[in-house]
Each structure stands twice: as structure tokens, then as C-alpha cells.
Length: 316
Image (tube, rainbow, N blue to C red; front, side, top):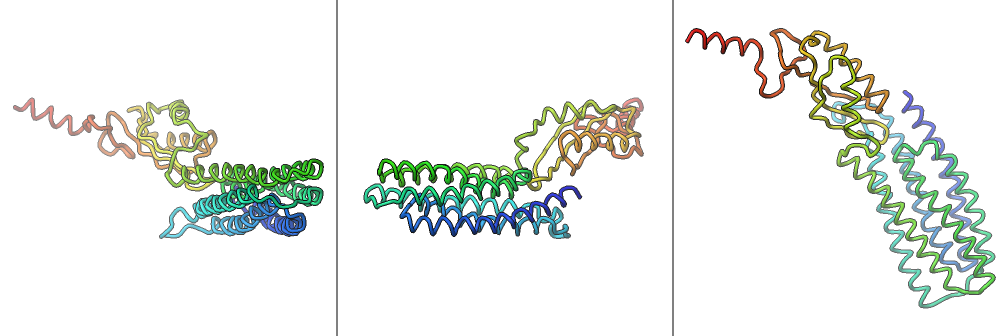
């Protein structure tokens, strides 16, 4: 329920960000054409991808809220991951376009109105900071984080454009504009890589980066009756949901308390590591006929099998 409320709030903030970003786009396109600034037009191209990503992110958050089905038993939690991958691809295309045009401008400089360029960037910076502040509390969601990367990229680019515009107005050095565009391209590429790496980690079902498996084992072994935790696998179902499977070795005398141990282990996993979906198989060195949830580790015979073999030896 808490995750659902967070996603609803994030959706509303993304829709507001979508409207404000459209305003930034209009300002930067008009200002870039008027001032003949490649830096402004480059950032406007980035803003176009912002609009696409914000729209896709809003769609993804709606999909995540859809209930699970027999075909998709984990629901639609990874729709946001697919959107983040598309986001990274769009950013890569923007980087290539900016680099090509910047190299052309370096070879063939054109007049740039630095003062107008800086004025347009001031408005863009203000709106970008407003959007970033609105989305910041939701950044744990990769879908929101990927959109936020765009917005912060816009903010830094706008700040750089302001400085560059003032320098052009004062010095008249036209090369500043395409050089700044190359800097913006590098910033966008860095943002794209961070989003891409996070999305790939989830799709490859890697252990979450902020979680250490040794710490999980240590915490679980503190539960009374637990001797060991092995065959441990932890992965992310989505941006805010983790799953775990493991084998849990418990004391022979505590087998009948397996349900109580399971409840305490799950509480530790949920509160200390935010792992709420667990699949745990119990093991014991000695299992008696009728024991529930008891599977022996490899190499340890069941008690009735061992007794039968001993009886056969005695008879022989």
C-alpha cells in the first residue's frame, strides 16, 4: 500500500514536470533560434527527450500499479525498467546529434547573441530546479530517477549556458558556444550510462548494489534456531521491490517450530533489508518421519533410512 501511494504521488509530480518541461522547450527553441545559439538548441533537443521520457515514465508508473495476473505473476513492475532503457537510448542519440553539430560549428562559426542566450537559459534553469525539487523525494524509483537525470542535466546545462552567454557577450569568442555544447553532450552521456547500468543490473537479476549478502546471512543467523543460510539469491523485481530465495538450516530440536522461525526470519528481512518476497526452504541435519518443512542437506541421510540400513547390517 505504501509503494502504491508513492507511485500515485510520483505520477502526479511527473505530470506537472511534463507541463513545466514543455514550457522550457518553447523558451529554449525560441531563444536558441533568436540568439543563434547551438548550446541552447542542443539543450532544447535534450528537453525533447525529456518530454518523451516523462510521458513514458508516467505511463510506466500506471502500468506498475496494475495487479498481477496468471501470465504475469509478478505484475508489471519491470515496465519502468524497459522505459529506463529506452530513455538511455534516446539520450545516446541526442549526444551523437549534438557532437556532430558542435564539430560543424567549430569549423564554421556563426554569430551568437550572448546576452539573449543567457536570458533564455535563466528561465530554463529556474524551471528545471523547480521540477528537480518536486521529483527528488521519489528518486528511489528507477523510472523517476531516469527522468530526474534528464532534469538535472538540463539544470547544469542551463547554468553553463548562462556563463557561456555572458562570456560571449563580453569577449565575443564564438567558439565558446559549440565547446559548451560538447560539454553538455558529455554530461548527457554520463547520465545515460548511469540509468543504463542500473536498468541492466535489474534485468540481469543482480544483487542490489546497496545490499551485502554477508550482512543478510549474519542477520538471519541471529534468529534463535537458525544455524546457517545458504544457496542465497537476492534480486530486484522492480525498482522498489526485492525478492530472495534461500535454504535455511535450523537446529534439530527446533524443527517443530519452523513456522515461528520463518515468521521471524521474514520480519528481519523486511525491516532490515526491505526484502518482502521470500522463498525459503528449511533444512535439518536430522529429519524424523512426519516433520513438516524439513529437507536434509546433501550427504545427511533421513533418520528412518539410516535406521533401516543399521538394522540390515545387524541382521547380516
